[in-house]
Length: 154
View 1 (spheres, rainbow, N blue to C red):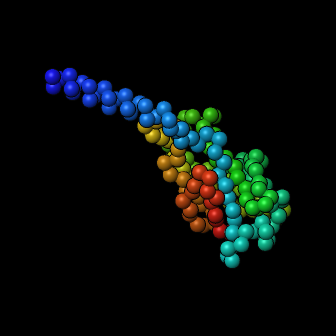
View 2 (tube, rainbow, N blue to C red):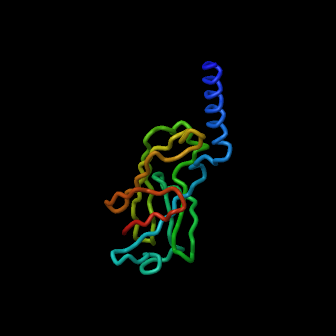
View 3 (cartoon, one colour):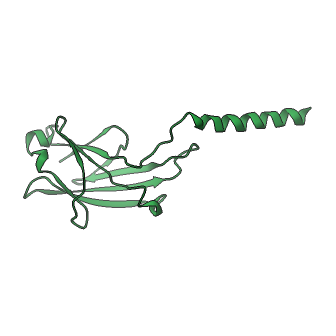
């Protein structure tokens, strides 16, 4: 009787663990674009106070233009730093990437990212960042890959 009860408990536990993932969307960093707002020392958005967001260009370390999106109302920009479809061999490794932010024809800043994409991220699968650091103007920030806006200072 004990053996039957023990087997029944194991079957129920196994089934309930599998069933849990059926209703959960696993996290994913595939296609995620990080959102940014750059603030000046007075906590004002530089694309309202000092620069035009229309003149912003983002370049990779080879000088190639990066495709990005802007929000004209909020004066924020967003772009993807990790392509999980083409960079599959980089999962579970620490990666550093550098980009140039050309704010206008004479002002260029560097923004760097250090992160570790993990796959699978949880018991239900998915992908995520184990950590995400943003380095901008000698300041390091904990990055957010979810819906939050990463506020960084010029």
